[in-house]
Length: 501
Image (tube, rainbow, N blue to C red; front, side, top):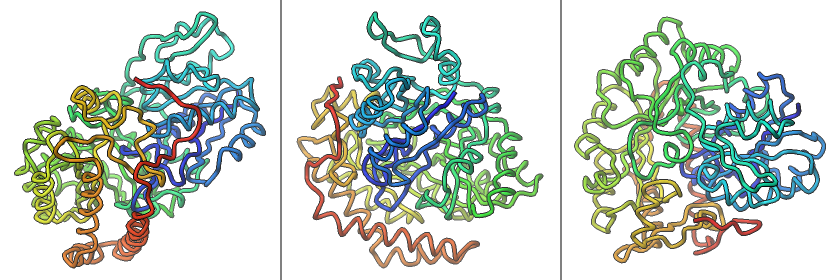
């Protein structure tokens, strides 16, 4: 069977795989990581697979439609995200016009929330909800047997009876994850690793998962609430090391591996096992990961010994009340201890902050600015709080009347950057977006950042760090210069209107 796996076109450089989906102020472009796992599994099933990343290749809708027509697939898997949903459905409709025999299945976070609305479109035949790669295996095996569709968990579809919504599929297990092909091998077969850039990583890099799901209860975080679930399940450490060995031995251009788990450091014992096996195998490739600010310094020291380079940590706010509001289960004092421990261990830190969360005021934004100056993260990311459908944050904002719009297609401006779709009586959405820009500009364009940047350059791989910083500087400066041209309420959404709850 021919299977076409598509990251559809939208605005240039759009990152559907990012936790905050936009075009990236600093040039960040994620791999289509979930799609790549799905493509690899379909290949392992013996199917002929074509993986297309339109945003990375600068393909428009017409180019995609022509390519699909040439490939003539039986099954087309198309990713989606909340901000691009209307556009993605329109892409499916355009494909259906030239390939009416192809069965089109939509995946991604919106699939778990809006399956019935999505299936109103003539361009979508199936929706695979939540964790979808194993669901697609069963769907491909039974695509030509409509009588079996009703037995498949995790899908919604339509037939002469209307829209059918089957029960959810159980989450994957460790055994399932260990059987999956290495996603780095999928990248090597289908993609150009030079197309992808993480502002926090040495370039080029690859992103892999060692586990899925996150047990923490952060109310704003979309992936655990709309895609991967709260249940934490992991690959075995030998399996992960096999992939790192493969990357080190077969992708000589790759300078770093980023472990894209929501929180790689959930289980410190597993982290220590990881470092021990890394050392035992004599690996050298640097790696980085997402962490929580509760991580102890001893574990960080062990990670550094095993060539861990950087930790991304979700600080979110400099105000303890906001942290309680979002169920972060971390305090500002813990952040200070974490930052001190990471510096002593010799690890770089990217500090993530969010402006506009429940309880945000001008005073709490000031506290966040002050904490950033105090912690001096090596890299800083500040995002506009976006209440994605399906999250507790969305429900709270909707119930409280703070949503400017409940249509996720309106979450981005006309250049593909975040807008604020929450506005409080005491703090407008315009102020929230302005604060994000000003905090970033005030941090990176300040003389205070010079020693922070110099400390990164004066490390191992200093030349690669310098090139990374230079690329970040150019891209972020371009973003800052473009700000006056951004439409206040513009949206890049294209295609037929999709009604959402």
